[in-house]
Image (tube, rainbow, N blue to C red):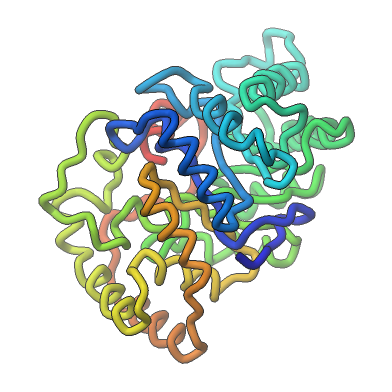
Length: 335
């Protein structure tokens, strides 16, 4: 795969979201299968692997996914960019513990689970309503200076929040919801990030499977499957969004690719600083998604696809503004 930059971090054009090996998509696979899947992705050319301290809340325990990813990446740790995220959680600035001490504690726990002495990309998973983002940025700058992290990022934030943070400690990336059917980031986030050398790392770039064409109105989501909570995947919205799925299927047939690959190729063509991280627990699907980097759209094909998408109405919009105060109980289910 070709490479892209998240400020100073060199990564593959498409990364890998690892959450599904611990929870979020129903029954999880055996550990050996998951480790093999992550290593196959690396062999394919993937060098960006994304996890978080909370992944594992339902099926296992917080931190389970970090432990799993750490085991899988151990043989080639220094050849990859490892990204994880932390929550400020119930911390109260009035209780006296310095914010730096809190974040440092979370970081050390993540590094222990991941089996590493540094994190390449450390995200604040969601904004905390009681903590100004400037204070978080100051802490992150200190951790970068100490060599504990190489870069830092925010998730589900606006361009204005990015501006406030960037003025204190330059960001490497923002991880927001972005896909063909969730395009809020195009208005202000992408322009700001392009101007300031910030990478955009979309989660759910295939819209939780909607754009793969494999999810239908008859699909049942069971157990802790996050897709039960995705508005676009309700029965009525799946039916209403079918024109988009059909459109994508037609383009895919013309290109000899899959709909999911077309959706990823579309954003790679559109923005030089975008690095999507599709998530799956299926080895075949993971390699298929990474193969989206090998699908090149011509200028004419992209313009035709863009025009057709702009003519479609999207049902079940989610948006990309979230904070711990509003969504902590649900964010992991939605991701």
